[in-house]
Length: 128
Image (cartoon, rainbow, N blue to C red; front, side, top):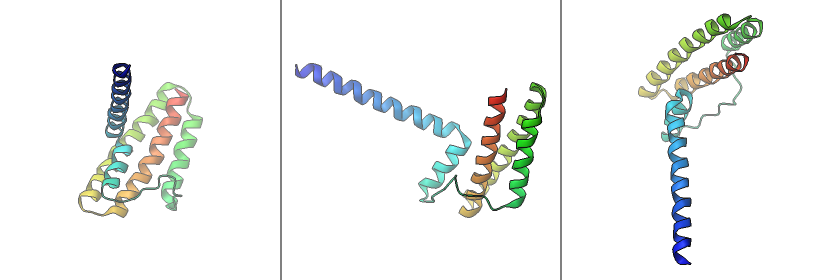
């Protein structure tokens, strides 16, 4: 009886560790999740739901969403998706520079932009 109990606990432990590895992999392979995690390691809290007050960014995001709504066909959506990928790369690099220079407010601003671009990209994926 004890042997079966030990086997069950080992299975539960293995499943728990497997879930942790999968979660860590997802965090590290997603630039936005990775950036948030890196700041968390520095005890910098990032609220991705915080409202953006940058009017330029808000206008850009609204334009992107309109473009996605009005896009007809896969080619148009893929062009917008490529633009978003370029912006994500730019802001990933911006985050890296800010983080390395310990400019955490700038790093948070980069994360906020990445959050909006990721959401716009998700809209495109749903539409494709």
